[in-house]
Image 1 (spheres, rainbow, N blue to C red):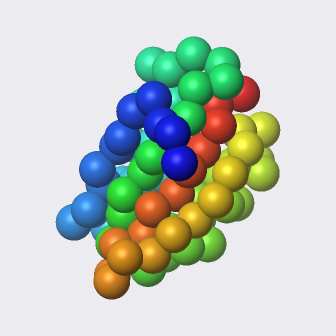
Image 2 (cartoon, one colour; image 1 turned 135 degrees about the horizontal axis):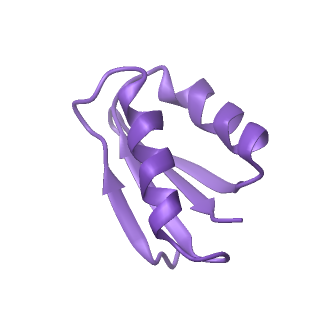
Image 3 (cartoon, rainbow, N blue to C red; image 1 turned 180 degrees about the horizontal axis):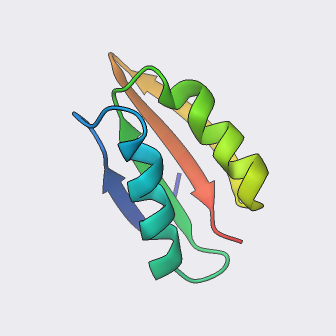
Amino acid sequence: MNKDATLDAKGLMCPMPIVQLAKKVKEMNSGQILELLADDIGAKEDVPAWCNRTGNQLLGTEAEGIVLKFYIKVK
């Protein structure tokens, strides 16, 4: 998937992946796509919930071993 930026949140535990995600999205323009990398199992539920709450669009999720990749379109 094409992406405009990548946020590496591997090694961070809840709630830090979401905190970092919120900061990064504020730096981006509407319509851009952010790839978020996380290995905290809580991100599997937290990222979709955050997207629903904030209006950003979760385009997809992939898993590579223990690393979860989320693709988020910025509102």
